[in-house]
Image 1 (spheres, rainbow, N blue to C red):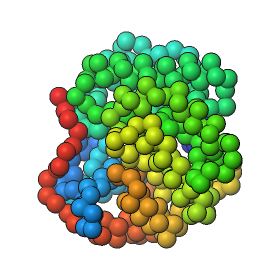
Image 2: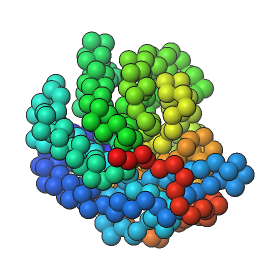
Image 3: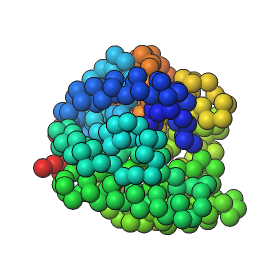
Image 4: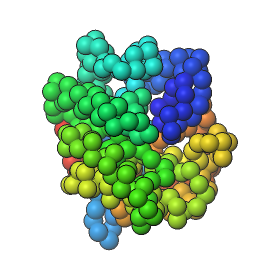
Length: 310
């Protein structure tokens, strides 16, 4: 999700120069996002369950989605906390000035907020390194919550730890248990966030593999943070990790439909992300499937229990 100089296990490789050139575009984009909440809520007819769809898309020429019951969401990228780039000070917490700016921006936007800081490693490193990282994630959250306690905040891809291969059910081997041990270090974060935002991007064309990973992520999320709403991030493009898929390859319509339907039945909502440097196309199969998916819900005017705001 985060655009920066290197791929850190789950995002695109754009290069350092691109990171700094696009940084200000996103700040401008997110500062001018339509802060109005959706005009309606989605209710699954059979269960009467409210299902949230949040808009974190980055396409050019995006239509207004509020009237489709799709809500805006505030994504705070790492450069909001590290203006010179996260690699400039890889082991440090944000400065007091950065906290102040971040708090002011969160308050101004006044909506459910996702923090996207990813450069403190949580997997594939010695235990002491991962523990120090988990403490940093907790400290950022603690400080934000202390200053804006009535704003709902969570982390993208931190709880549970983003892992494309170990997070699969049914359990294949001991890799799943090793992933759980990684997640146990983040219990304090899981207990403090207001919502969980796991990463469920598409990395293979096999829907069974995606569902196995989704089941593992959701089960682990509820083990760590029982009762808290879960809104996975999904992306209508294949993830280009490892060079298997070219940048911008769209997930097939039927595949996207299956993902939406699985999450409707097993999560509290979804966050739609992606579209950087792409023009929005109303004829894309993923979007046509999304429209049909929206039509399967009953719609109720107004909001039910949106973010508590100061």
